[in-house]
Length: 104
Image (cartoon, rainbow, N blue to C red):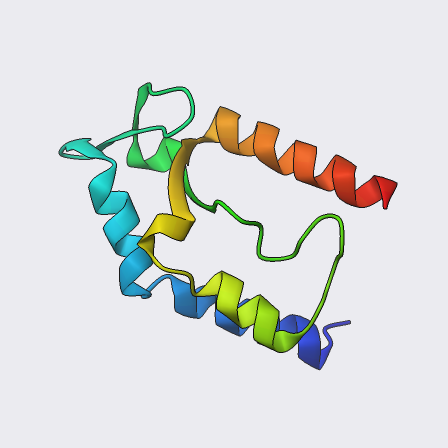
């Protein structure tokens, strides 16, 4: 069952796809047409194999949900708040964040 909060989170996440600093971070990692450099391992990958990652997690793994203000501020961060990661590096980061969250 979808709740209003979950629906609103989905809407806000979709809105970030058009957020100019997010696009600028992807452009900064551009190597050549359709190829981007991972900020972590420094290898190059096609667009389908990279993720645009928030350096500071939108929901802090240690503190969990704080407020809508904090969520929105972190979600719509400036260009320096994003990094381009290959799927492998992004999966590692996500796994680490989730394990921290599970402990707290």
